[in-house]
Length: 367
Image (tube, rainbow, N blue to C red; front, side, top):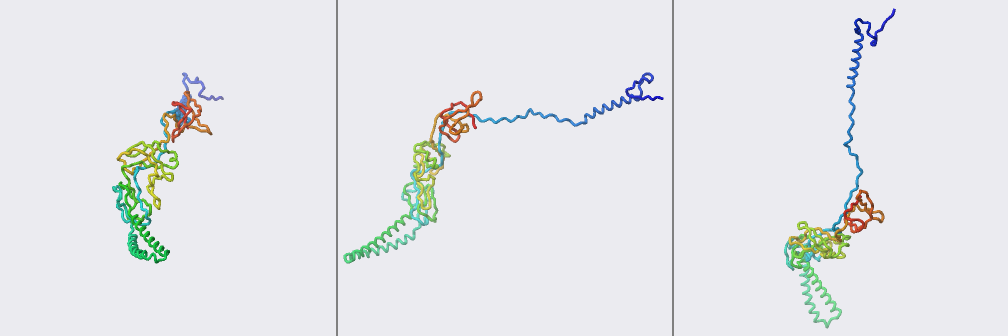
């Protein structure tokens, strides 16, 4: 007995009329279903990420050093400071009598005063009382001296001389007391205006304490202060530029340098028994001031130490030094760079004058 197996690949020739068997049709349908499922399964997989477009990202460039053009200009070396408007005729008034209270103050800032007019008075009532007592004692002694002179020939010469010396000492004490009382009243030395007042009534006054300043408003001058180092670089006659806020810039010249023993600190007077500061302790600048500028107006100024017209200059940032060599890097027309030794003239805080080595229009490289 034999058996016959049907497969999907077996030829369908046994069926009558050439028709296929049902098993073959089922196998074809199964293959079609499996193929469709495989295609559909591909749609269930996760999407692959798109590639990032890097064309818009700029790569970092190597930093380029700045380049500066060699130019010409008027180059000035200067020193600067501050000051105020004072008067060429002014006086800081003070008492020379020490350790007294201010009994009366007759003035206030802005007052006009005449020469000899009382300004302030110290309390010396005790001196006046002692003066009256001494005056009575002197009158009594004068009578005794008259009697002594009549008996001069009868007296021992040494005894007579001692009594006369004692009388002269008392008279001198009386004169000193009168002088101290006179010093207790402070008077104006000339016609002027009270520029400032430094004390109040009742204050304890020391000798040479500043009481007030009397100034002639018609004689104004710029009083300036500089550091000691800068002052050593200034000479009389140098050009100065004065800057006053509500007026602008005015040009003048250095008229006077401070006294050799001055600290040039611009003070208006010292306490503690020190004499007050005077105009000879300032640097004075001669400049024509408008009438609107009042004494005491603050200001700033510059003194021109050196000026060069049409100086060849470059920024200090382009100047290089190695050992004793000073040079710059010059940019050529083709963009290449070469080192050039230079000779430097005057320098400011931002620029340097090139005396030799460069021409205007060239370009140099900064650091």
